[in-house]
Length: 167
Image (cartoon, rainbow, N blue to C red):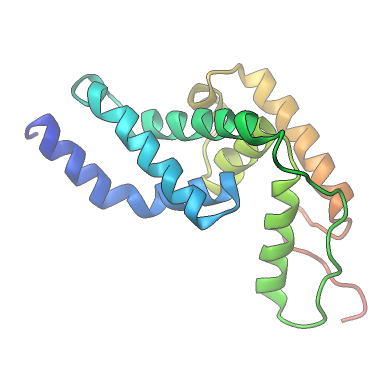
């Protein structure tokens, strides 16, 4: 184990791609995701020498910052409940775009739970720890978010794939 500065640099090199993916799923925008990761890493630096589980610590900052940013900006943004029609071709890409758009319609905490739990494959306990909430809250937020996603995308299966009828 090296110095905290060296450990931090190694963490950033090794995990920045995964953190950026999580941030993108939380924000729905590449530029916002990059800003979110940068903010989270800047907030982590002062505590780095004391952090036992760096990945969990930075993910917690990502989730909290994402929710805080949404709260600060929500009065400027308008959202729509309607999703665009699914294009006729393109399969996997279309499904990901549709799911990403639907994720953007979830409340920030619901989106954070879904991203951490199902995209980052954290357990309920790890998700609860990352968000600073109880396991019961993770369960209820996930249940409500999945119900909302199923309402927005009626053909969504348990794996997050869109089932297309007639093909």
